[in-house]
Image (tube, rainbow, N blue to C red; front, top):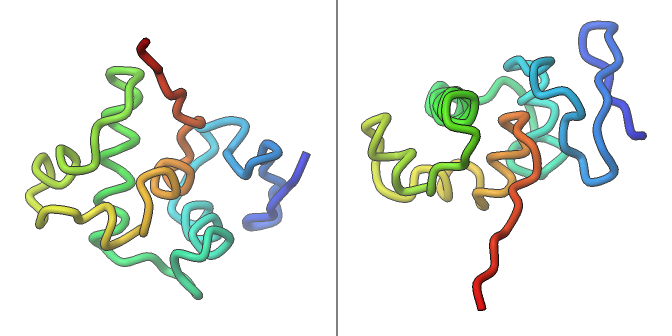
Length: 108
């Protein structure tokens, strides 16, 4: 399993780069994941990015579900498409927020 080191602590990632234990997440881990994902070249993340990530985490912990990106922006009073403009891709945002890989439900 891949590992990143944050403040002398080994943090495990799965084969796709998602945190194995989402409870280990913090802003420093988020920044390292953002660099790995190509969202930023250096730390720290912006206040807006942290606000988005924290809201996504709070929503996921409360409902065990992923909120659509436009609803994230609306709920934290940011412009439409704030997730896309800050993270390029909602999947990258979920990963940087330390959330598990979203499962896609398909209908027939």
